[in-house]
Length: 253
Image (cartoon, rainbow, N blue to C red):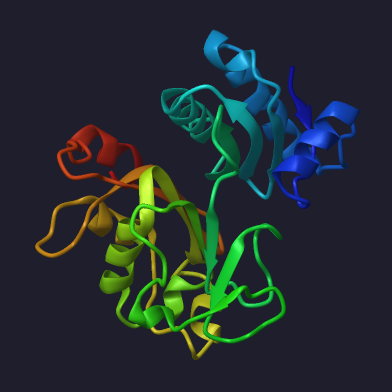
C-alpha cells in the first residue's frame, strides 16, 4: 500500500509520484526507517487502507495523503512518532472533504521546508511570501493555520514566551508546531552570535505545563540529536485536559 517518495513539489506532486510508483534514492538508514514506518501503519486497519506517500529524511518522517477524520490523522502521527529512530513527523495529510493544509514557515529565510508553504521572515529573501517582524506577533487570524514550521529560528527570538503564545493562538485545534533548534551541547549553538538563547530537550517541558500567562502545548514528539533538538507540539485548547504526567514522562523523564 505504501511507497517511498520525496515531497518537494507539494502534496499534489507527492500524490502524483505515488500514482506513478516512482521512489527516490535514500540512504540505508532512511530507507530502513521508511520500511519500519510502513510496517507499523499496516498494522492498523483504519490507516492501512489509505494510499499515503511516505519518506524518511534525516530521521524526520514526511507523509502526504488524505484520511477521513482528525482522529485518524492523530493516530497516524502518534504511530509514526513512536517508531524507534523517528524524531519528528512533518506530515501534509489532508482530511477528506477539506482543502490543502495551511502551513506557515516562520523565520524561514531563503529556505522553506515546503515550496508551497507561506514563508514569513523579517527580511525579503527569495521565497519569503510575507515580510513581518515576528517579535511583534504573527499577522495571521486566530485558529487559521494547520501547521507551523520554526526551523532554526526560535534561538533568534528574544521574547519567546510571547511568540509561543501567538503560535498557540493561530494554530487550529489539531494543528502542530514543528520546531528544530540547535542542541545546546553542539558547537553550532554557540558559533552564531545572533543566537540569543539555548535549548535542550527539557526546554520544551516548560511549554507543556501550566504557567501563568502561558498557553500550554501537548508534546507529540521530542527528540535530541547530536546537533539539534526536534519538537512537534500541539496547542492544548481551552477545556482540554493538560498533558498527563505519563505523557510528559515519555519525553522528559
